[in-house]
Length: 54
Image 1 (cartoon, one colour):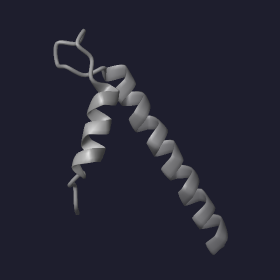
Image 2 (cartoon, helix red, strand yellow):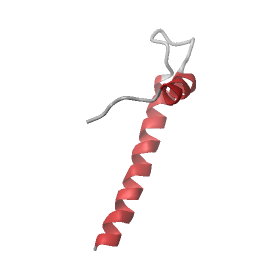
Image 3 (cartoon, helix red, strand yellow):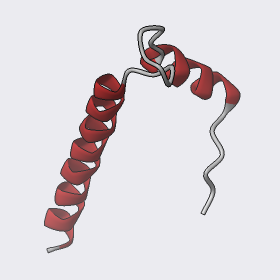
Image 4 (tube, rainbow, N blue to C red):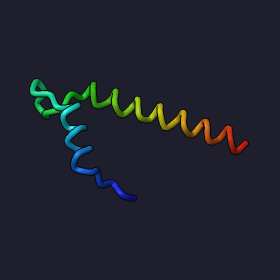
C-alpha cells in the first residue's frame, strides 16, 4: 500500500485544515468533514461500478 502524498497535494491539504486556534494545529471538524465527504464520493463510485458489473 502506497501512503505517500505528493508535496503539492500535501501543502494544499495542510492549508485547508490548519487552524491557529487549535492546540494541535488543525481544525478537527473541517478535517472530519473532508474525510467523510471523500468517503461518500468513494462509496458513490463503488455503487456505480457494482451496478455496471451486475
